[in-house]
Image 1 (tube, helix red, strand yellow):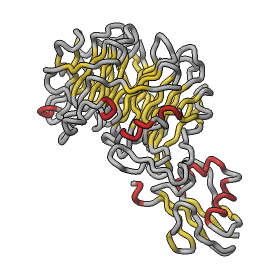
Image 2: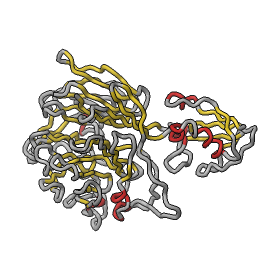
Image 3: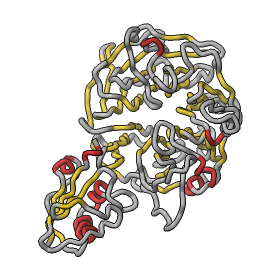
Image 4: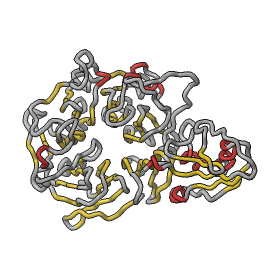
Length: 89
Length: 367
């Protein structure tokens, strides 16, 4: 299963420990986490379920390419980091 | 008289209370977070705070029986595939909550009903104390909504919500930039009500279009609800007929530009403003922080400065950052440079409560 790590700054607002999730894409993996932590969804994704403007995701050392559909492929060995973009201040 | 004051700032929500004749900061909630609005619902006793995290989006919190909890924030519906939805300048409108920009109670006969104005221009309503929100579709789907534009923000902002004290179904809202809009049937139908306003920054053929106006703040007299005041980008305007017509108030020293306005709860001719040099500068005239007050409906103004800094003061008072209590004697305002000032005699004399708060978005009195 892919490993998902959330920025520690998120933990100040919402409980979001590192997690493991199944899926073929970043979207599928994140949805697996949101199923048990619905409030976290609104901190990472916007109303249209796209990645928030000032959030960033790194998959296996590379920035997420598809910020709207989150369709970047992952493997069972992937590491997904959900981070704050510096553009957000 | 209200002995409690809530100041929403870039770095938290601060509670100021009066005791022993003085006012002091007694508490801080959400310390370090960007609190953009606070609102106390007198019907339920609940407090509400709007936060806007730079990274994580705009959120709402509610305090019940002394305990804060996060509640649902208004959410925009999915943008229909292929829909072109642009603002007045041709920029794509995001179907996404950018910021909560106004939050008010419905009428006293509407327990649990809240109105919430947002950027990018959607008005929302909750009927259950903020548990769930619905977008007011008749306004969002109104074809004239696409003429609105941002004023100081990237997209249109609903910043003022006035529920008519005579009839809760009558609601007026102020939009930067989209004029004043009114519903008389609880949100089912809407009409623009900004005749008489003008926007000098627009080409002549557009400048009097009611739907393009930039009212910075709209307030309604509680005792004479047909009287409304607007601090507009182009000056001060007054309506005596429930927003059907507006007329400019001229010759206001030292400036008629500003963001905030407050009206006395029982004297509709008495209103206060926080003037600044307009447009390019946006600082107090001559570096002197003052408040202007009219007691005669705008024919004459007092420039109130006792107790306010009169040298190298560069404070700006944002549109939600001046408040009046139910007595009409106490006013407070907070500034972009962390000043908090309060008067207990309608502005004749001010006292500095703090000059070290974070930049302030909003001020509210509360019981």
